Amino acid sequence: MSSRRLSESFFLGPDVVEISRKLLGKVLCSRSPSGRITGGVIVETEAYAGAGDRASHAFGNRRTGRTAVMYRRGPVAYVYLCYGLHWLFNIITNVEGVPHAVLVRALQPVRGAALMARRRGLDKGDPRVASGPGAVSRALGISSAHSGESLLGRRVWVERGRSIPPDMVCSSRRIGVSYAGRDARRPWRFFIRGNACVSRRDLNRNYENN
Image 1 (spheres, rainbow, N blue to C red):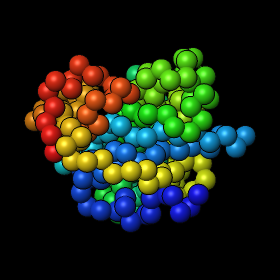
Image 2: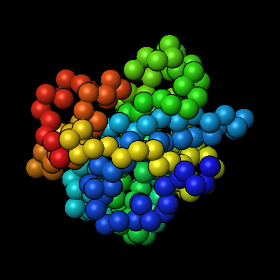
Image 3: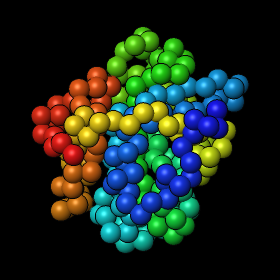
Image 4: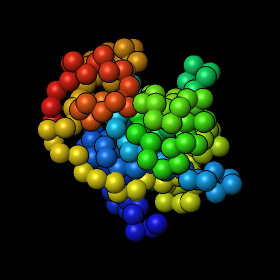
Protein backbone atom coordinates (compact mmCIF):
# COMPACT_ATOMS: atom_id res chain seq x y z
CA MET A 1 0.00 0.00 0.00
CA SER A 2 2.87 2.41 0.69
CA SER A 3 3.69 2.60 -3.03
CA ARG A 4 0.24 4.08 -3.71
CA ARG A 5 0.57 6.84 -1.14
CA LEU A 6 1.49 10.42 -1.85
CA SER A 7 4.96 11.23 -0.57
CA GLU A 8 5.68 13.87 2.05
CA SER A 9 7.17 16.14 -0.61
CA PHE A 10 3.76 16.55 -2.29
CA PHE A 11 2.49 18.42 0.76
CA LEU A 12 5.53 20.59 1.51
CA GLY A 13 5.31 23.02 -1.40
CA PRO A 14 4.88 26.74 -0.66
CA ASP A 15 1.66 27.19 -2.71
CA VAL A 16 -1.33 25.82 -0.81
CA VAL A 17 -3.67 26.88 -3.61
CA GLU A 18 -1.81 24.70 -6.09
CA ILE A 19 -1.72 21.79 -3.64
CA SER A 20 -5.46 22.14 -3.11
CA ARG A 21 -6.04 21.98 -6.85
CA LYS A 22 -3.72 19.00 -7.29
CA LEU A 23 -5.46 17.03 -4.52
CA LEU A 24 -8.46 16.60 -6.81
CA GLY A 25 -8.46 13.01 -8.03
CA LYS A 26 -6.35 11.75 -5.15
CA VAL A 27 -7.84 9.21 -2.71
CA LEU A 28 -8.32 10.04 0.97
CA CYS A 29 -8.42 6.90 3.15
CA SER A 30 -8.97 6.02 6.80
CA ARG A 31 -8.56 2.85 8.84
CA SER A 32 -11.00 2.08 11.66
CA PRO A 33 -9.88 0.59 15.01
CA SER A 34 -11.12 -2.78 13.70
CA GLY A 35 -8.96 -2.45 10.59
CA ARG A 36 -11.70 -1.59 8.08
CA ILE A 37 -10.46 0.75 5.34
CA THR A 38 -12.70 3.34 3.74
CA GLY A 39 -11.74 5.90 1.14
CA GLY A 40 -12.90 8.19 -1.60
CA VAL A 41 -11.64 10.20 -4.54
CA ILE A 42 -11.26 13.85 -3.54
CA VAL A 43 -13.64 15.81 -5.77
CA GLU A 44 -13.80 19.16 -3.94
CA THR A 45 -11.33 21.16 -1.83
CA GLU A 46 -10.74 24.65 -0.44
CA ALA A 47 -7.36 26.30 0.19
CA TYR A 48 -6.59 28.40 3.29
CA ALA A 49 -3.39 30.42 3.16
CA GLY A 50 -2.58 30.93 6.82
CA ALA A 51 -1.48 34.17 8.44
CA GLY A 52 -2.39 36.44 5.54
CA ASP A 53 -5.78 34.89 4.81
CA ARG A 54 -8.70 36.36 6.76
CA ALA A 55 -10.68 33.17 6.21
CA SER A 56 -8.03 31.03 7.91
CA HIS A 57 -8.16 30.04 11.58
CA ALA A 58 -4.49 31.11 11.67
CA PHE A 59 -5.04 34.62 10.29
CA GLY A 60 -2.58 37.04 11.87
CA ASN A 61 -0.56 34.05 13.17
CA ARG A 62 -3.31 33.34 15.68
CA ARG A 63 -2.45 30.37 17.90
CA THR A 64 -4.82 28.54 20.22
CA GLY A 65 -4.92 25.08 21.69
CA ARG A 66 -7.03 24.01 18.73
CA THR A 67 -4.98 25.62 15.96
CA ALA A 68 -1.50 24.74 17.25
CA VAL A 69 -1.50 21.73 14.94
CA MET A 70 -1.70 24.07 11.93
CA TYR A 71 1.89 25.17 12.58
CA ARG A 72 3.32 21.68 12.34
CA ARG A 73 5.18 20.33 9.33
CA GLY A 74 2.80 18.78 6.83
CA PRO A 75 1.15 16.55 6.15
CA VAL A 76 -0.95 16.25 9.30
CA ALA A 77 -4.69 16.26 9.92
CA TYR A 78 -6.45 19.28 11.40
CA VAL A 79 -9.97 18.36 12.52
CA TYR A 80 -12.31 20.84 14.17
CA LEU A 81 -15.96 21.01 15.18
CA CYS A 82 -18.18 23.29 13.09
CA TYR A 83 -21.40 24.73 14.59
CA GLY A 84 -21.15 22.14 17.35
CA LEU A 85 -22.32 19.48 14.90
CA HIS A 86 -19.81 18.46 12.24
CA TRP A 87 -16.15 17.46 12.29
CA LEU A 88 -14.31 19.08 9.37
CA PHE A 89 -11.15 17.44 8.02
CA ASN A 90 -8.23 19.56 6.80
CA ILE A 91 -4.78 18.66 5.53
CA ILE A 92 -1.98 20.84 6.90
CA THR A 93 0.66 21.53 4.27
CA ASN A 94 4.01 23.33 3.99
CA VAL A 95 6.89 23.38 6.46
CA GLU A 96 6.82 23.84 10.22
CA GLY A 97 5.63 27.30 11.25
CA VAL A 98 3.57 28.01 8.09
CA PRO A 99 -0.12 27.30 8.86
CA HIS A 100 -1.45 26.39 5.42
CA ALA A 101 -4.48 24.10 5.20
CA VAL A 102 -6.69 22.38 2.64
CA LEU A 103 -10.28 21.60 3.62
CA VAL A 104 -11.57 18.42 1.98
CA ARG A 105 -15.15 19.24 1.04
CA ALA A 106 -16.33 16.15 -0.86
CA LEU A 107 -15.37 12.60 -1.85
CA GLN A 108 -16.59 10.01 -4.30
CA PRO A 109 -16.51 6.71 -2.33
CA VAL A 110 -14.32 4.00 -3.84
CA ARG A 111 -13.13 1.84 -0.92
CA GLY A 112 -15.47 0.45 1.71
CA ALA A 113 -18.35 2.34 0.07
CA ALA A 114 -21.00 0.26 1.84
CA LEU A 115 -19.53 1.07 5.26
CA MET A 116 -19.27 4.75 4.37
CA ALA A 117 -22.96 4.75 3.42
CA ARG A 118 -23.97 2.99 6.65
CA ARG A 119 -22.13 5.59 8.71
CA ARG A 120 -24.22 8.24 6.96
CA GLY A 121 -27.51 6.33 7.10
CA LEU A 122 -27.77 6.38 3.30
CA ASP A 123 -27.87 3.84 0.51
CA LYS A 124 -24.63 2.80 -1.15
CA GLY A 125 -24.25 4.85 -4.31
CA ASP A 126 -26.11 7.86 -2.96
CA PRO A 127 -24.02 10.89 -4.06
CA ARG A 128 -24.64 12.55 -0.68
CA VAL A 129 -22.61 9.95 1.26
CA ALA A 130 -19.49 12.17 1.36
CA SER A 131 -20.80 15.38 -0.22
CA GLY A 132 -19.90 18.26 2.07
CA PRO A 133 -17.09 18.54 4.62
CA GLY A 134 -19.10 17.24 7.56
CA ALA A 135 -20.22 14.27 5.50
CA VAL A 136 -16.60 13.50 4.55
CA SER A 137 -15.57 13.08 8.18
CA ARG A 138 -18.60 11.08 9.17
CA ALA A 139 -18.32 8.74 6.18
CA LEU A 140 -14.64 8.08 6.95
CA GLY A 141 -15.16 7.76 10.72
CA ILE A 142 -13.00 10.83 11.42
CA SER A 143 -13.31 12.94 14.56
CA SER A 144 -11.21 15.21 16.76
CA ALA A 145 -9.26 12.10 17.82
CA HIS A 146 -7.57 12.29 14.41
CA SER A 147 -6.46 15.93 14.73
CA GLY A 148 -2.67 16.04 14.66
CA GLU A 149 -2.45 12.60 13.05
CA SER A 150 0.33 12.23 10.49
CA LEU A 151 -0.97 11.49 7.01
CA LEU A 152 2.09 9.31 6.53
CA GLY A 153 0.85 6.81 9.11
CA ARG A 154 -1.71 4.00 9.24
CA ARG A 155 -4.90 5.74 10.41
CA VAL A 156 -5.40 8.40 7.72
CA TRP A 157 -3.52 8.83 4.45
CA VAL A 158 -3.79 10.03 0.85
CA GLU A 159 -3.17 7.79 -2.16
CA ARG A 160 -2.04 8.89 -5.62
CA GLY A 161 -5.29 8.29 -7.45
CA ARG A 162 -5.26 10.08 -10.79
CA SER A 163 -4.55 13.49 -12.24
CA ILE A 164 -7.56 15.53 -13.34
CA PRO A 165 -7.26 17.21 -16.77
CA PRO A 166 -7.13 21.02 -16.46
CA ASP A 167 -10.35 21.46 -18.42
CA MET A 168 -12.19 19.37 -15.79
CA VAL A 169 -10.97 21.46 -12.83
CA CYS A 170 -13.21 24.36 -11.87
CA SER A 171 -13.02 26.98 -9.14
CA SER A 172 -15.32 29.32 -7.23
CA ARG A 173 -15.30 31.43 -4.12
CA ARG A 174 -14.99 29.51 -0.87
CA ILE A 175 -18.19 28.69 0.99
CA GLY A 176 -19.23 30.17 4.34
CA VAL A 177 -16.44 32.74 4.73
CA SER A 178 -18.29 35.98 4.03
CA TYR A 179 -16.74 37.44 7.19
CA ALA A 180 -13.32 37.41 5.49
CA GLY A 181 -13.80 40.61 3.47
CA ARG A 182 -11.86 40.68 0.24
CA ASP A 183 -10.39 37.28 1.01
CA ALA A 184 -13.90 35.81 0.76
CA ARG A 185 -13.81 36.58 -2.95
CA ARG A 186 -10.71 34.52 -3.67
CA PRO A 187 -11.52 31.62 -6.07
CA TRP A 188 -9.88 29.01 -3.86
CA ARG A 189 -12.58 26.35 -3.92
CA PHE A 190 -11.78 23.66 -6.48
CA PHE A 191 -14.00 20.88 -7.77
CA ILE A 192 -14.29 18.37 -10.60
CA ARG A 193 -16.66 19.52 -13.29
CA GLY A 194 -19.89 17.51 -13.44
CA ASN A 195 -19.09 15.17 -10.53
CA ALA A 196 -22.32 14.22 -8.75
CA CYS A 197 -20.64 14.14 -5.32
CA VAL A 198 -19.58 17.80 -5.33
CA SER A 199 -21.38 19.82 -2.64
CA ARG A 200 -23.37 22.97 -3.32
CA ARG A 201 -23.88 22.18 -6.99
CA ASP A 202 -25.89 25.39 -7.31
CA LEU A 203 -22.53 27.20 -7.31
CA ASN A 204 -21.28 25.30 -10.32
CA ARG A 205 -22.90 27.90 -12.58
CA ASN A 206 -20.35 30.46 -11.38
CA TYR A 207 -17.19 28.48 -11.92
CA GLU A 208 -14.04 29.40 -13.72
CA ASN A 209 -11.83 26.94 -15.57
CA ASN A 210 -8.21 26.70 -14.44
